[in-house]
Amino acid sequence: MTAEYVLYLSRETLSTAILILAPLLGAGLLVGLSVGIFQAVTQINEMTLTFIPKMAVVGLILMALIPWFLDILLSFTRELYAQIPLMVN
Image (cartoon, rainbow, N blue to C red; front, side):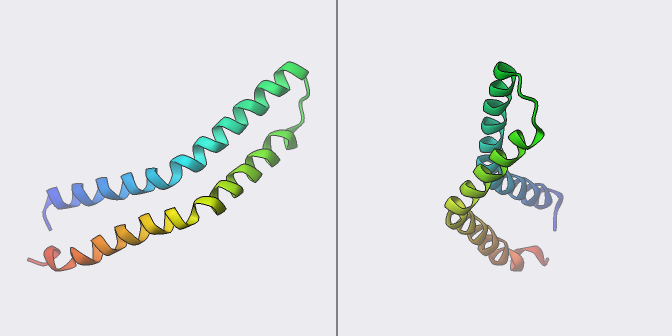
């Protein structure tokens, strides 16, 4: 296993993780920003008002996109298994 292969594998792993986590984190960010603006305008400082909507939206996004996430993870895993013979020199 060469250093270039390790770097390639690391890059692919990180890009797969970012591809899976970006929709979840983006939705949480947008909901948190919206609730934060709402709280600033109405001067309501309730901690559960920020937590519950974020949790609900991230849960809904996760349930809606889980087939896509599994497809990405399965293709990544298949690629790793296909490259096992190339790792042994």
